[in-house]
Image (tube, rainbow, N blue to C red; front, top):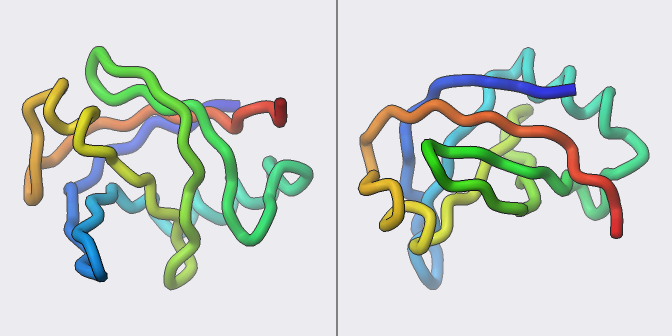
Length: 96
């Protein structure tokens, strides 16, 4: 199964800044159901495509939605930052 969605890159400040794109609540609920066997500590391992960059990460649950973390290397490779709207494609990743 695959999800494609548009979202704004947001910053979540903590000890260090983190950048994310949030899935919709409906997509998050669907993904949670489809990936039930992969979820650990509330996180879902996924394969993500953003522009020409493909990477693996784990989604973070927050407020009924999943957040897709965007590492500095991904944002730099794609030339995107906080406030930019991007299209994200993701698939649940098989445990290895």
